[in-house]
Image (cartoon, rainbow, N blue to C red; front, side, top):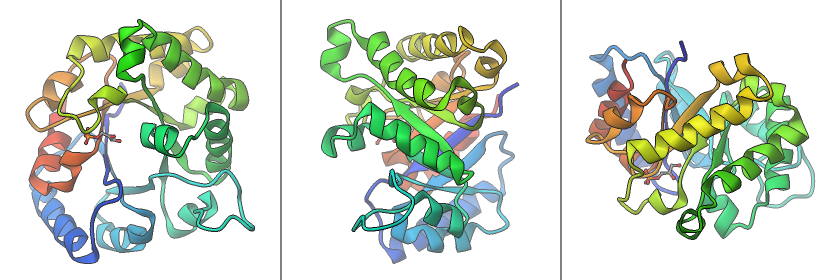
Length: 252
Ligand code: 13P
């Protein structure tokens, strides 16, 4: 049995006040729920200490949204994975499509970040996914395999033992378009198969999250698919009630 994971990616949103309110709202919503999922919050880096302090003792985990491909040194503006670990983050999102597209991160750079993050005992949440154009060209599995194999080839398949994969079709992110449960399940099954060809028991344990316009209204149908082990939530994670409902939808 794989424990589901629901992670909130707040992206570049919030202020001290709004984050304070969101956390208070979330804590009061979640208090009355019995959750099976591991729940993670990924705030902008500068707000991580505020979030860590607020969630202490609640069982909620905290992760970064990105980390540098270097440990320390003359890299102005970067956040080292060691900083995230030093403050008490357990996870870090890597290879999000916004990093790939807007900041031109390559498969090999993401693989380097993955290896460094694991060296700091952070669990990477590795994002993969195709664009609309790639889906229309029937390239979905090729793209997702290429993105995943870049990490497997660099880090070794065993590295997936301490990682989470998030399938986020780029065309479904922030657009209100959600992959159908069948579309998502097909890709999740292909990802698990790719890992199973290298290590069956690792594949059986690997948590694969779906991301892209997950809402309280569609979460349960998506999460009930055989190979979908929870979600990586953008917009809806900024609303306490919606996010809590999505966390609950991960109960089997
Ligand atoms: P939305 O849920 O806003 O579509 O964003 C998904 C996402 O990019 C999470 O990382």
